Length: 280
Image 1: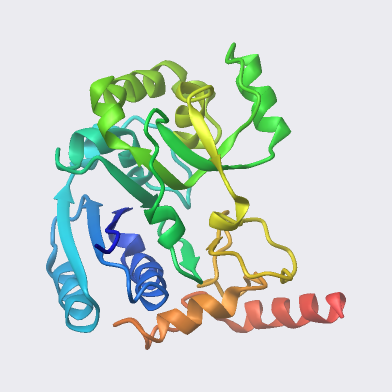
Image 2 (image 1 turned 180 degrees about the horizontal axis):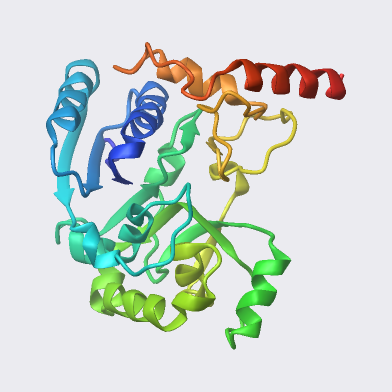
């Protein structure tokens, strides 16, 4: 029997294209793995999303589940320019997801998958709440310690293996929302801080190849999941990520294949030429 991969994406209107690129990269590199995709969204008009689902269903062996969540629940939560309320949907996953789904992989929409996820599909968390990649971020550990949280490590929440069954058994979503409210004024990395505060001693480490971020130069071995974390993204003209072309490679396989840079201008062209010449 083939392993089934349950994947969760949380999206809003501004990230539909990028979610589509991420999902194409999953499909293209996991042709032999049955995919069950859950899309948690706050869209008022789902027509574009339904067209995208039809596109995928006609091209790949994939099942979709649309789950809506009212984003007004997070009206008073801390945000920045490149982060929307959808990031906080992660806190409610065990309440939103169908009860028959015991375990799933959460993926941010600003990622690219470059190889099979079969290894992740075969994981069994048993008594672990989540698995994630260690950020190796001493500053974030110090921040949590200063809040009274005895954390020794800090994980990135862009790729998570989630034990939904254990979350439900222990009412974790309610506890996460309460934690967010308690620490809201002290959060720097939004819901990621909330997850690290609550799970500081309840998570297991994933190999870094499943969530590689802050890449400056191309690596000897291509990571399984590349995470375009930060404010500068590969769909920005001035972005210089070493794997930027991979985003555009998979973009060409989506309904958004005719997308052009929205921030292209003569001014930015000059900036890019100047920057390139400085790095030669």
